Length: 226
Ligand code: CA
Image 1 (cartoon, rainbow, N blue to C red):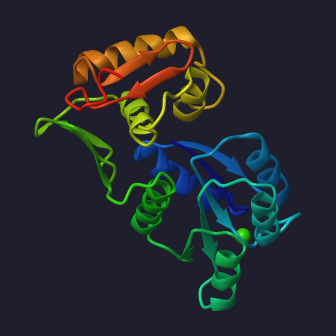
Image 2 (tube, rainbow, N blue to C red):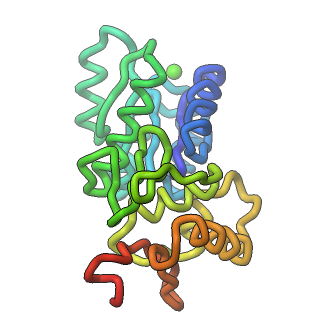
């Protein structure tokens, strides 16, 4: 999952970013409204954390522009304490939820998980694929009741596929959402990673769709032969 953090206070931004990285997200930053506007239009994010008080272009304007142009990624708005008007304006501009400053990082993480899974039509923080369970709260995968020993990158790969079970995910898209920065975006590296993950979770879960990408399926389900 790739998340954009928009916050002009760099210390707060980095603090949120570190917690997100520990929780298994890939993080990008924008420190003013102009940069946020640009990144929101050029990158494909799984979610955005957006402070409203920003230099150059304010957060509400940025959010309205994104929504007016059909950018549908879920947005968690950061608002000032006591300003109910700002919270209402944030939701009306297209925000999916908000957190009031100063906030507890656990609340930011929980609300972020919730808006991401709702954007994928998932109701529960635990995603089930047959005997495989992803606990998105703990960034943990469990197979037949036993916790799997996955690297953060393997978990990010599995997590992204689990949030997109209904389709084959192209390799370029996968690379954009699981790798930090612009490094390592090599299809062969991705194929090796998929191979490692397959060995850990067992065959059948990750199907290769020629020309389309990778698709996560329940190997015990009726769609497994599709
Ligand atoms: Ca601010």
